[in-house]
Length: 353
Image 1 (spheres, rainbow, N blue to C red):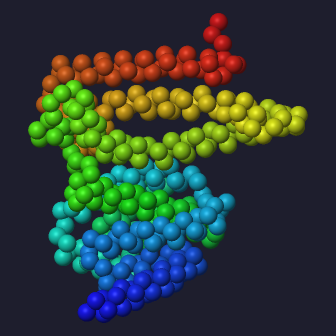
Image 2: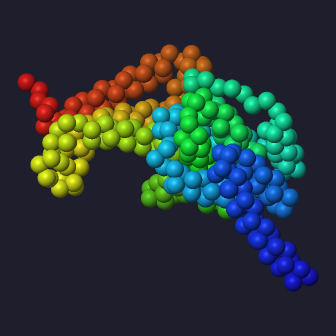
């Protein structure tokens, strides 16, 4: 019996490698299609809850390879909007899949595969990319392969073939990373008990200041990770744009023409000038995070400022609304005042007379 199980496991590994290679080749040639075929293969062997995570890991490697080979062909303007929307969609998808009976997951996968092949894919315009990314990533967590959906979104830019394939690959890679993070969170919270799924403290809070503080940090881990994942994509895109725009300025070309070392040019001519708008984005983002994040606080049952503000509005509690508005305004003023000081330190061209 053990030998039979071992043979079946070895056969599954061999078939998985062959299927992964074949479907990756299909996706590399045509841009889409490989993910749906691979999903159908895994659905024949794996239990429902294991299909999508395993599929995401394999497709991450496949799309990552295409991204590396075609990195110069990626159409970057779509990414900041898509990453932000996809983060929200993956979050919603993770919450929805917990409510679906395991027996129905394969049924929904089959329906979506049939719809992807025979159905009518929606058409998007550039103003609908954000909402399309939310829907596509939520569906991806539930049914697995939404490459055709992603391709329909990217197709709004009417890109050449190589640019289209590279951009779809990058978007799919980002989507699979977020899916893996969602399933890691679900596994850690509901299976491994590594992090609590919600709340600010344990049901029986520990006694003592240090123990209570550590319990607070333990419960804050997943909300903080969620907020970081939501903002890291747009922050990386903003920083990249600022640095590239500064690197094209004439004074940078003059510095390089003088024969200055590249590290000196990057540190003094590029990063120091680009630091001001980057610090502005970071400071205002931190000020906004102090104001709370209603969605994150609601999902993790965290009693934060955003949730309190929302509840005060719904209850028409004028005193709380006025107090929180005053507090948020004060935070913004302090952030702006701090930025003025940082500008003087970062950019020697700025002087207040």
